[in-house]
Structures are given as C-alpha cells and as structure tokens.
Length: 207
Length: 207
DNA sequence: CACGTTGGATAGTGGCTCTATCCTAAGGCT
DNA sequence: AGCCTTAGGATAGAGCCACTATCCAACGTG
Image (cartoon, rainbow over all chains, first blue to last red; front, top):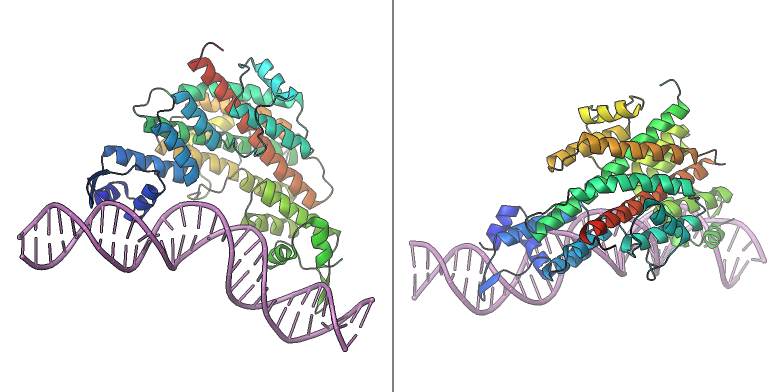
C-alpha cells in the first residue's frame, strides 16, 4: 500500500499525510527504495487515531505528538492513560504547576473520598485550580467540594471500567481519549440541563 | 476620560481598544466632537468584562459580541444566563441542532430527575451529544445517565444559588460566566483525580 | 502655533493546520 | 526504451484568529 492508497482508504489528503509525516505523527512507511514506500494497516489505524484526536477530541498536533511518542516508546499503559487524561481534561494549563504541592482543601478531598494519597497531574491541577478560584474570589466551600467529589467518585468507577483491554495501543488511546472526552462533555451537558432546570424553577415557578 | 486613560486604567492597549470598538464589543465613547470622545466608568467595566471573557473563560470575539448585544438590547436575565451557558458550556457545537427534538434517553433523565419538561439549548445539546456518542459506539446505559444526572442535579442547586443579584448586567455576566467556567473546570479536575485514583487502585493495588 | 489625540482605514504579525507547487530520482507498464 | 506516475524533500501560500502597528487628516488644548 502506498501513500495514495493510504489517502484513499482514510479520506485524508496526501498533502496532509505528508504533513503528519513531517511532524512526526505518522511513522515513515517502509522505504523500499528512494522513491517508494510501503504503508500498512498500522498506518491506517494510526491515521484514524490522529484524525479522531484532532477532530473529535480537539487536540493539537503538539499534544498528539506527545502521546504518540509515548506509545511508540513503549510507555506503560497507566502512564499513557495519565498522559491522555492530561491533554483531554486539560490538566496542563495550570502553567505555574511548580511541582507537587499539597493544599488543605485537596488533602481534605482525598481523605474524605478515601482516595490514595499519591501525587499526580490531576492532583496538581486541582490544587492549582482551587488556588485560581480563590484568587478570583470564587468561594469553594467544603460542602461543595464534598458534593462535587462524591459525584465524580461515583462517575469515575463507571468510566474506568470501560477501558478494558483494547486490542492495540492505538486502540487503547483511541477509546480512552474519545471516551474521556465524550463522558466529560456529557457531564457538562447534563450540568447545563440541571442548571437550566433549577433556573426555570426559580425564575418561572409556573412550570 | 479619553481613550488613553481608559487604556491606562485597564492595562489594555489603545490598539486593542480600537479593535474592540471596531468589532462592536465596546460601545463608542460619547463623541464630544470629531476628534474627541469621552469614556466613562461603564467602559472600564465593560472592558474588564471583555478581558475576563477572553482570557479566563476563553470565549472568542464572536461569542462575546453575541452576549454583549443581548445585554445591551435589554434581554431578560434568564435569557442572558442561557446565552452565557450556551457559550461557556459549549452547547452550540452540535451543529445539526435541527430544532427541538425529543429522545427517549433525555426524556427519561428529565422524568427521573423530576426536571421541568421544557425545551432548551441544554436539552438539545444533550440530545445531540447522546446521538453522537451512539454513533461512535460509546454505550451510555440508563444507570450511567442516572448516576451522572443525579450528580449534576446535586451540583446545580449549589451553583445557581451563587448567582444572586449582582449590581449591573455586566457584573451578572461576569460572575455567571466566570463562575460557570470555574465550576465546570473544577468538576473536570475532580473527575480526573477520581479517575486517577480508581486507576491506581486498579493497576497498583499496593497503594 | 505646536503638539497630541481621535476616528477611520489598512496592513502586518504570529500561531496554527493544513494545502499547493515544484523538483528530481526512480519504478512500473507497454 | 519510453512515458507516466509516484516518493520524498523543500518551500511557499492559504485561511483563520486576535491582535498590533502605521498612517492619515481633522481638530482642540496649552
């Protein structure tokens, strides 16, 4: 299978495929000679993964490259899942992430929920976010955090269970990334509907 | 107060202010004559609102313009909140929104949660999203939807209560948009931590 | 009177994701 | 053998977005 067939099968233009090759998202085909390269089903799978991460999940090239590099370097699946989570759930942005910090609020959440007391990107992101909210004068009460975290604890059990034994690493990334994205979006949609419902009850009691 | 002072007080460059004026985000100052205009505290407030919506909430110019137009047209607060919700929680994207539709899954959620049976952007977005997930072969069981919606129902009550009587419409938009954004992000961060905690327990039971 | 400011116009910047063009060397088909 | 097509490499351009910069003529203030 050569470039043109790869393009035909996936619906991605040759120019874009070349671009992905340049950017190191797609591994080079097997160079038969100076002007011929063979692509395989692996490449089709990889290309479909790239497309899904770009168009559905909305990651940028840099983020995709990071994940694919880890996958190709044979990183353990747990680390891979963490990396996917980081970009899909936007745990990077804290910028001033400055290492593993501990804050009372986060410690409290971990204790109450009986979660393992481990440093993680998620924990750092939570710390940073709580600090940000504080700096913006948005109060986050213990009760709120308790309610939120309980809800998310309930939800997480169901989510993780869906990540069971996909066939290839690319499959794992695909299902994990798309799944996380879709579930988090579903949650936000439900939040919106819940908020709207509460608002209607408040503003128009005639419902 | 003239343009330069407005720039000085808010830290926004004159060029950007001109840009916002061109784009219709910032109302023109009171034209004293052909080459002089007066800006007021209103403009400072508006400019700060624009900055917050851009930099914190991450809205684009088009979205900001839509909300500000509604505000300036004197739209009722409930409608304004709905519009804010639409852009902050990303309820637009469904694209194929094609009017108010009803689907069994959404109906079931509304019934179970005892929410008012009203069409809304949130409901349409939920419908569209569920259809999308179905088309991607991501199963959404009734139990999952029940758990998610219960969690969001609990959360929404707390959220809406925070939207109490700000001083000006700009203030309302500011607190609503920033609040919604921060709370939804908080939820996602907690989801991430919850997922990570479950994953650790699963992959490394030694914790 | 000189300077600075305004509104208006217009163009440029930088980041991002492609998309298009051009080139040479080299198969593959007839 | 000869022609068509393709790979790979380089490079440039497109289109979007949110600015940012420059230029201008008109005009008012110190």
